[in-house]
Image (cartoon, rainbow, N blue to C red; front, side, top):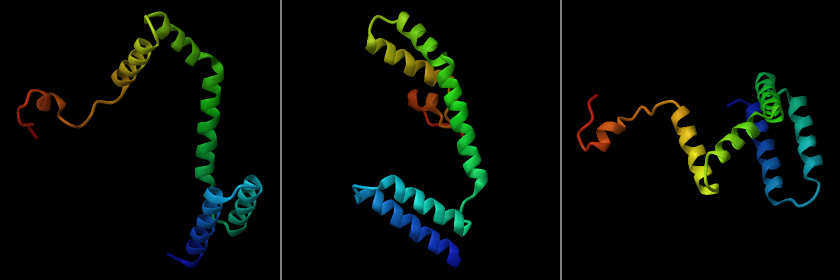
Length: 114
């Protein structure tokens, strides 16, 4: 690690420690540390842009009403809140990528084939 990385890590640790124990002036302290990080050139603007883009896409999706439409559809097909929660979990698990682990082999109690 070079000197700038050590200074940046120490400043980040100080800011994080203050946020954990400090009671007052949290926002001004964070902005002050952010200004110091920008002055040191310790900000990777590509990462900031990625976070900002993800935030904007998430906000647009949330304000579009699609999550509400999906939730209403799931609730209308369920009898109560518990069933709606289970349906959301089942829907989420069915749309996710399959696990790399050989679950079928494990469930059948046979050794997995590699």
